Length: 109
Image 1 (cartoon, rainbow, N blue to C red):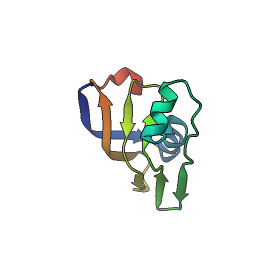
Image 2 (image 1 turned 90 degrees about the vertical axis):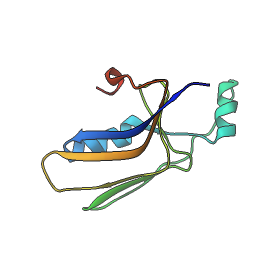
Image 3 (image 1 turned 180 degrees about the vertical axis):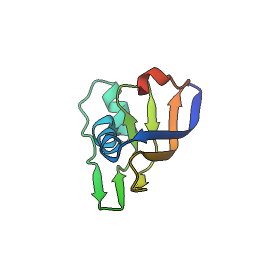
Image 4 (image 1 turned 135 degrees about the horizontal axis):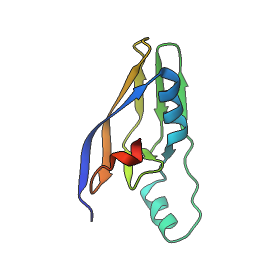
Protein backbone atom coordinates (compact mmCIF):
# COMPACT_ATOMS: atom_id res chain seq x y z
CA UNK A 1 0.00 0.00 0.00
CA UNK A 2 1.45 3.39 -0.97
CA UNK A 3 1.93 6.37 1.23
CA UNK A 4 -0.47 9.19 0.49
CA UNK A 5 0.33 12.84 -0.06
CA UNK A 6 -2.75 14.79 1.00
CA UNK A 7 -3.45 18.45 0.81
CA UNK A 8 -4.79 21.34 -1.19
CA UNK A 9 -4.63 21.61 -4.97
CA UNK A 10 -4.76 25.17 -6.29
CA UNK A 11 -5.47 25.74 -9.97
CA UNK A 12 -4.80 29.24 -11.26
CA UNK A 13 -5.81 30.74 -14.59
CA UNK A 14 -8.61 32.42 -16.44
CA UNK A 15 -12.17 31.31 -15.80
CA UNK A 16 -12.20 29.51 -19.18
CA UNK A 17 -8.88 27.73 -18.52
CA UNK A 18 -9.95 26.45 -15.10
CA UNK A 19 -13.32 25.34 -16.48
CA UNK A 20 -11.52 23.48 -19.28
CA UNK A 21 -9.25 21.76 -16.73
CA UNK A 22 -12.25 20.61 -14.70
CA UNK A 23 -14.21 19.27 -17.67
CA UNK A 24 -11.36 17.80 -19.72
CA UNK A 25 -8.71 17.08 -17.07
CA UNK A 26 -10.77 15.12 -14.56
CA UNK A 27 -12.37 11.71 -14.94
CA UNK A 28 -15.09 10.27 -12.72
CA UNK A 29 -14.01 7.27 -10.66
CA UNK A 30 -15.96 4.01 -10.59
CA UNK A 31 -16.98 2.44 -7.29
CA UNK A 32 -14.35 0.45 -5.40
CA UNK A 33 -15.82 -2.83 -6.68
CA UNK A 34 -15.84 -1.35 -10.19
CA UNK A 35 -12.19 -0.37 -9.84
CA UNK A 36 -11.29 -3.91 -8.77
CA UNK A 37 -13.16 -5.29 -11.80
CA UNK A 38 -11.32 -2.86 -14.08
CA UNK A 39 -7.98 -3.99 -12.64
CA UNK A 40 -8.94 -7.56 -13.51
CA UNK A 41 -9.49 -6.53 -17.13
CA UNK A 42 -13.27 -6.27 -17.07
CA UNK A 43 -15.10 -3.39 -18.69
CA UNK A 44 -16.62 -1.03 -16.12
CA UNK A 45 -19.19 1.69 -16.58
CA UNK A 46 -17.88 5.05 -15.39
CA UNK A 47 -20.50 7.11 -13.50
CA UNK A 48 -21.88 10.25 -15.09
CA UNK A 49 -20.52 13.59 -13.95
CA UNK A 50 -23.15 16.14 -12.99
CA UNK A 51 -22.23 19.77 -13.67
CA UNK A 52 -24.18 22.77 -12.46
CA UNK A 53 -23.00 26.19 -13.53
CA UNK A 54 -24.32 29.71 -13.40
CA UNK A 55 -22.78 33.16 -13.49
CA UNK A 56 -21.51 32.89 -9.88
CA UNK A 57 -20.30 29.34 -9.39
CA UNK A 58 -19.41 25.98 -10.92
CA UNK A 59 -20.24 22.67 -9.20
CA UNK A 60 -19.10 19.25 -10.39
CA UNK A 61 -20.37 16.02 -8.80
CA UNK A 62 -19.31 12.40 -9.11
CA UNK A 63 -20.41 9.76 -6.59
CA UNK A 64 -16.91 8.33 -6.06
CA UNK A 65 -14.69 11.35 -6.77
CA UNK A 66 -12.33 12.14 -9.63
CA UNK A 67 -9.03 11.02 -11.10
CA UNK A 68 -6.69 13.72 -12.46
CA UNK A 69 -5.91 12.63 -16.02
CA UNK A 70 -2.25 12.43 -16.98
CA UNK A 71 -1.03 11.78 -13.45
CA UNK A 72 0.09 8.75 -11.55
CA UNK A 73 -2.63 8.08 -8.99
CA UNK A 74 -3.82 11.62 -8.22
CA UNK A 75 -7.39 11.85 -6.93
CA UNK A 76 -9.99 14.32 -5.71
CA UNK A 77 -12.49 13.01 -3.20
CA UNK A 78 -16.06 14.24 -3.24
CA UNK A 79 -17.41 17.03 -5.37
CA UNK A 80 -15.89 20.30 -6.52
CA UNK A 81 -17.34 23.72 -5.71
CA UNK A 82 -15.84 26.79 -7.30
CA UNK A 83 -17.11 30.32 -6.67
CA UNK A 84 -15.94 32.93 -9.16
CA UNK A 85 -14.20 36.08 -7.97
CA UNK A 86 -15.01 37.83 -11.26
CA UNK A 87 -11.37 38.77 -11.81
CA UNK A 88 -9.08 38.20 -14.79
CA UNK A 89 -7.11 35.46 -13.02
CA UNK A 90 -9.12 33.05 -10.90
CA UNK A 91 -8.01 30.53 -8.27
CA UNK A 92 -9.76 27.21 -7.69
CA UNK A 93 -8.90 25.60 -4.34
CA UNK A 94 -9.60 21.88 -3.96
CA UNK A 95 -9.21 20.71 -0.36
CA UNK A 96 -9.72 16.98 -0.88
CA UNK A 97 -6.67 16.24 -3.05
CA UNK A 98 -4.67 13.01 -2.61
CA UNK A 99 -1.85 11.41 -4.58
CA UNK A 100 -0.07 8.12 -4.01
CA UNK A 101 3.59 8.38 -2.95
CA UNK A 102 4.20 12.02 -3.80
CA UNK A 103 3.18 14.81 -6.11
CA UNK A 104 5.13 15.23 -9.34
CA UNK A 105 4.63 18.86 -10.41
CA UNK A 106 5.57 18.08 -14.02
CA UNK A 107 2.38 16.02 -14.39
CA UNK A 108 0.31 19.09 -13.57
CA UNK A 109 2.14 21.65 -15.72
